[in-house]
Image (cartoon, rainbow, N blue to C red; front, side, top):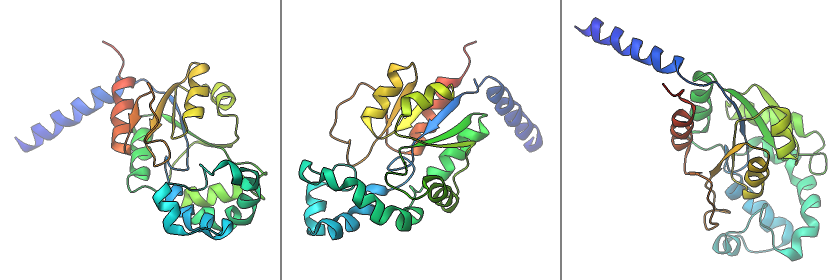
Length: 212
C-alpha cells in the first residue's frame, strides 16, 4: 500500500508539472531576495552623520533618502557598495523560493538596478553576492532600465519591491508581483503583493498552470 500510494503521488506530481507553462521570470535582488534596507541603515547613519535609532524610527535607508541627501546617493554607493554588498543577508526563504521556480521549469533572470555609477564592477560584486546567498539563476542583468530588459528577455513576470519598476514592467505587458518591503509597505497598489517567497511560489504556480 505504501509503495502504491507513493507511486500515485509521484504520478500526480508529474502530471501537475507537465501542465505548468514554462515562463521567463525576472527577479530583483535588494529587498526582494535580500534584506538590504535594514543592512544598509548603519552605513547610511555613518555616512550622513545621523543617529541610527532615528533612521529606524523614520524607516529611512539607502533607497528612500530625503531630498536633501539625494544628491549624495551616488557618492554613498561608491563608498560602500563594492566592499559591503556581497555580504548582504538574504531572506530566509529566498534561495528555496527561487529553487522551487527553477524546479517548476521556469527561466530565472536576475535584473538589478546596479551600474558603474555605484560600483566599480556591478557584475563581479553581484555574482559574489548571489553565490553567498545560494541563489540559482540563468542570467544576470545589471541595469536601471528594467522595462527594456524585460522586453529584451521576453519576461512574463517581474518580482520587485520598487513600484516604479513594477509599473515600467506592466507598461510593456509584463505581469508584476510587488514584494513587500519596509519602504513600500504603506504604498497602495493594484498589483498583487507577496509577503514572502512562499507567496511568490504559490502565485506563480496558480498563474502558470495551463488551462485544461
